[in-house]
Image (tube, rainbow, N blue to C red; front, side, top):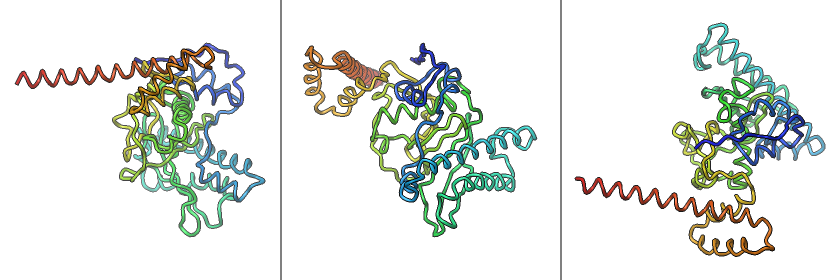
Length: 339
């Protein structure tokens, strides 16, 4: 069931935007550690839109510089927190996670992290603003902190975010978990879903810095009232999470580690576009099928093969779904008759 991308191409000269394009069209590469470190730019995504707008509005002539300062501050904060985490373990203060720290040590760590980020973005923020970090939880691959930025009047300058600081820069479990793999899945999903990402079952992903091994995403509250439309992205994109049962907060998926490709995965944007239209318009899918089959049979139609691939994927998906329903009904009938 699991598919691994072999990556046959030479990545010795992985350019400024090439890494981002690779991540947009595929997942589960089996040699991240061979090509990601060679990329000229190891950041995908950007700061939360609210903060981008704040910077553009207040620093129109220095917006690129301010954004880089913010990214640099997050990177330095991540490097410091990771170093402290390793030191705590080496000194025997913790065995597994930061939750074992004393209250005083945890308070000091969070204050130091806040000071590091604040020193890099002080110019960006209004006077008397506060940068606050609070430890949330640890996972197999990293520690998560809630980042809050509040002005002098107690107003949040951007929604709370989750800063995930990975234990290691390189992959821990190749192709599924860790710094590179999770940045890859986030980038693929954003491109595949487009604007639907904002109202999807996934937490919003903002930025992943693979050099400094952190990611910044939407902070989810357990009882948050989140507006989103549920779509079965497993069927739509041909992906599956091996950690799905423990990756939900407030009804949304927060952890992008453990995603693998299924039989119907496609990274081609043209095929995916037609396939998504069929999957998202079940009521008129028969009309769309007729239209797409006509297009695919027309020699003048661009991307005929990709349209055909989308049709085949949809028909196969429908057959699999119907077979599952039929199997479930047969099983239920057997159980009832047995009684």
